[in-house]
Every structure is written in structure tokens, then in C-alpha cells.
Image (cartoon, rainbow over all chains, first blue to last red; front, side, top):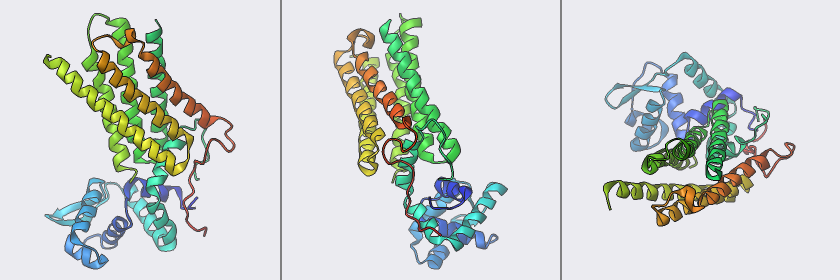
Length: 128
Length: 86
Length: 106
């Protein structure tokens, strides 16, 4: 459908709830050694620190960041595989930004469709 | 006994739903499917306990105990519906 | 009323609400997607909720002796029917299902 590769599709479904959250993740990834405070990140993305704190926390809970110092976060995917997936997403976000944003925006209704499609016993083509 | 047969059918139906949802979760990683799948596991257990209650332990009243899997299943299902369909 | 009865009442109330909330969600999904499966699920969960209510009102008789298991049967037959409906005639299938996110083709 969106034509995004399966692994990217899967990652976005599983880990990303908003474009801002994705931006936060990709920014931490671009400077892997750096610890970001909510304030720094908010300035960089023209957002509010309180919103950023929420993004940090959900990414932390999903094993993509670690809290390097109180209130400061660093890119730290819990596996090499996850790091590769984020890399693929970053690539797609550069090349096919609209497709990625559309997928994130349509996630709620896509989840609902996935529920219904789960009841198809015969496998449908997966790349859909 | 008709009631027991009905409970078996209900348990199997819930189990089928759970299997289909969890299978789809394994394929696509949509979290809603995980919560719904687990929810249906709860409903399946609830029906299975009814069968056990009726056929195997007819003397003991398990009505509170047999409600708990259903309650847990619904709680998980509602959690998924609330968080993953926004 | 002893403690066990109170607890059972509490749990039954929570279950009733759980079925009701699920039914409303499925109803919303039906309106959003026009996929019949959700309408049937909403009906089934609504029925299960009503069955639970009826059961509490007729307590302490066992469900298997009240005939209320027939309602349970209908609810689960509805779900089974929805699954069968979903799989009937795999080409085209029931209702709009699979994915149509509006990303422009490359």
C-alpha cells in the first residue's frame, strides 16, 4: 500500500506513535554519543519540553533510548537488529517522507483494519 | 449435557480468535492484536473453567474464580482498544 | 450478603462494563470502516454483557440451569459467523478490509 519496505512498516507500527516521536528518535541517532535534555531537544524541534519528555519516556520504555543522566537521554537501541531497523527508517524518512508520515498518521485506523484482517484464515499477501 | 457442549464450543471459538489475533501479531507486530489476542485467551479460559466446573467439579462453586479470567481478559482487551486505536 | 457474594457482584459489574466498552469500540470501528465483522462483534459483546446482567439478577441459580447459556451460545455463534463471513469467497471478501493508506505512489 504505502510501498514502504516491510521492516520499516513493521518498525513504525510497533514503536512509533507520532511524527514528533520519530523526529526525536532520529535526532538522537544522528549524534549517538550525545545526551539530550528535553530543553535542548525542544529547541531543536521547535516543540515544548513537556511534550518532548513524553517522547523520551515512550522511547525509553521501548528500548530505544537510555537515561544517561537524570532527565538526559541518549540513543541506545537494545539490539543491533533494532539499530538497523532505525537506520532503515531514517533512510526512508529522507527518501519517502510523505509515505512515512502518512503511515504514522493512519496508524489508528490501520490497527483497526489489522484486527479485522487477522480473522482471515488463509494468508493474504503480506506486503500489502 | 447441552450446557457443557455450548461451553466447549464457546471456549473453542474464543481460542480460535486468540490464535488468529496472536498469529497476525507475530506477522505484523501491531500491538492492538497482542492485547486483543490475550483478551480472547482470557475469554477462552473463562469458558474452559465453566466446562471444568460443570463436568469435573460439580460440587464446588467456582463462580467467583471462574469469572476472574474473563475479567482479566476484558481488562487487557479494553487496555488495547483504548491505547492502540487513537 | 457475605464477602464472596459482594466480590462476585463487583467482578460481575466490572465484566458487564468491560463487555459494554468493547461493544462500543467495535461499534465505532464498524462506523469507521463499514466492515461487517465489527458490527457482529459489537452485537456479540453486547449480548454477553446483557447475559452477565441477567445472570446476576437470577443468582444464585447456576447458569447451566437457567437457559441463559443459550444467549452465550448465540453470542459465540455470531463471532464464529463473522469469521466465516470474513473468509467466504476470498476474492473480494466481506467489506472493505485491507489497508488503503493514502500515501502517494513513488
